[in-house]
Image 1 (cartoon, rainbow, N blue to C red):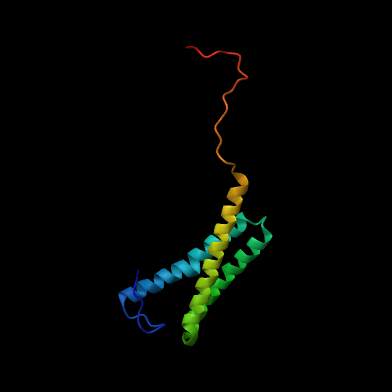
Image 2: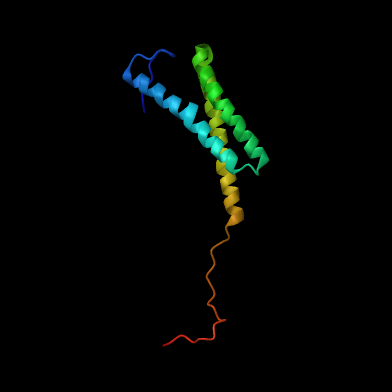
Length: 121
């Protein structure tokens, strides 16, 4: 969406500044906030909640680490994205499994025969 500047850690164009602003908003604020909301929503699922809170910590820490050590920038960035998308996949699986447990297949409703009133013709 926004082209990054060629030198890691240096912002020299408007597109580079927008790229950094979008990354800060998404990876340092929005994604961890969304994960923490779902961690609270699924707090009864202990493993999912623990993994969610771990992702809330890991994603921003790795995001900051990508700016601190430019030597392994790409590796840290991919680990951060992998952690985020692994959590997103776990959320999709959790929602799919919960949906399967709470819904039943659609069946045709049987007419109510308990009523004594006859329909008018």
